[in-house]
Image (cartoon, rainbow, N blue to C red; front, side, top):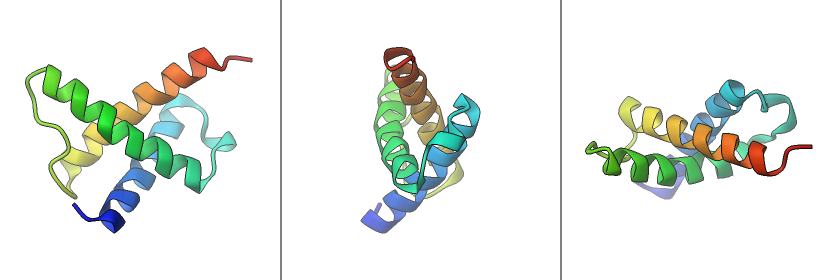
Length: 83
């Protein structure tokens, strides 16, 4: 997957995960991309450990994996940086 596709998929996944985690109002576009790309890595690791496949390209399955991973990243970050 190319750099542009990674950024687009990460942005979409980060945005969806921020809505799930309830942090959408505090996050900007760059934060969504960063969380989405980190989420793709975390989601890929989680799915590989569970016996599935990680991010496979620019498709709905990869978006799902990225959203799951980004949600995990946001919930962990929210627990660490709780105000």
